[in-house]
Image 1: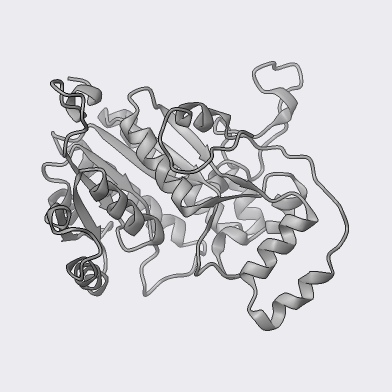
Image 2: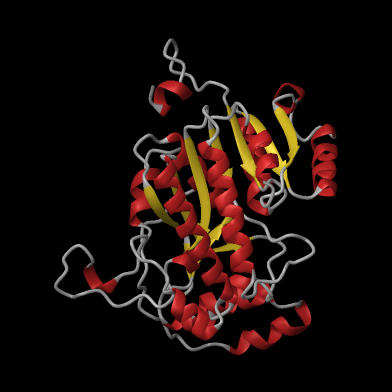
Amino acid sequence: MTIAQDLYNEEDSMFCSKKVCVMEAAGQLGSTLVHRLLLRGYTVHAAFQNHDEMQRFKRKYAGGNVDESRSKNLICFHADPLDYHSIVDALKGCCGLFYSFEPPSDYPTYDELMGEMEVRAAHNVMEACAQTDTLHKVVFTSSATAVLWGTRKRDQHDSSHSHSCVDERDWTDISFCKKYKLWHGLSKTQAEKAAWALAMDRGVSMVSINGGLLIHPDLNIREPYLKGAAEMYEGGVFVAVDLNFLVDAHICVFEDVSSYGRYLCFNRVINSSKDATTLANMLLPPSASSKTESLEDDMVYEQRISNQKLNKLMLEFDTGSDVQVY
């Protein structure tokens, strides 16, 4: 049976309620995914690595943020990505998994060791998926930093890669990341490669979303993605994504039977002084943001990154927002 047959009611073509797991549900992406999936009629297993976060989440939904009929379709689990058995429990009966890694609260900093932790987590999750008979599809949240660092320029005679443009076919160079201490890119690249290797070995159907810098209210200058921001900016590969667009992309690649492989996901390109100033004012505290207002040059760097593959997939998806073509 195909995923389309499994997810849709053949009699009235209406979307049926099915079980999916969202892990980690406490983050900006995870919590929004849970809410949106409930509204779309799914039963959601929301998995949390932190018990206190899980209790806060339960109280939030008990407070009437979704109607009672939909809140009944929410089941919370404590699932540590480094604990294989807890992941298996959260996945029981689910047809899909939306997986994103959130650093543990007691080790929030991306450094050389974070990559090892994220790889172990990815390995545990994919192994648990392979042991879950009901699971049809995994949406693995990666990052654009697993695509754009140390990417060699394309052969200009290769017609399939015009203008040396970076896309989801590229992989970040691990040696480059180690040399320049780009720990976020290193971690995301190693974890995604580990997930793909295990998915292929175990026959798990997987797609990945390689998102740009996530724009959200709590974004600040300490965001690990921003290491090397100046180089990304000047290289024309500094991209960002709004939370709602990122959530829509995740649901789209899960529901669309034609989705495959990796998808670069962004709806903002930061390649002009105006864009840089706008972002700087978001990142810096009010007392410091005034320093960026003097950037008045009209420098624009050539864009060298494309999300065309995702755009094509989302053309007929009801996102609730405009899809931009790059």
